[in-house]
Image 1 (cartoon, rainbow, N blue to C red):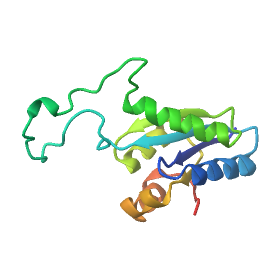
Image 2 (image 1 turned 30 degrees about the vertical axis):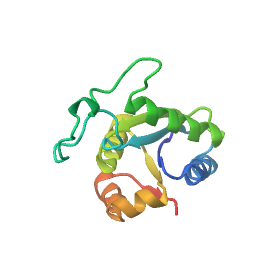
Image 3 (image 1 turned 45 degrees about the vertical axis):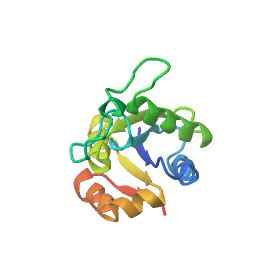
Length: 151
């Protein structure tokens, strides 16, 4: 059985859904699917970066990230987005996964973790601009798996 890792974008839902749907068309219903969304740590979840200037009112600085049912953490947010992509692509059998960190490292961790046979990159245009082609190159070079890059 083929295991397909679909790395999706938090910035382009439609492109992510299209990538998941194409993967499903290519690999069929017999494959195992994992849909991965990656939350960048600088999204305001938690603390102020070390290089940030000290605010005039320290009490207004964000503290530790709230947790619990009313305050999902960054991994939960990313996992929810991955689940939304899978659902909208009619990939109901996919396992949604959220991760936090640098996208290439998160994708490579997921490739190793799920023993993916193939990787589908359905990353949005703003993520591509931010990370350039280096993300795709590094996943192709370091992932050790075939990579389908959705444009």
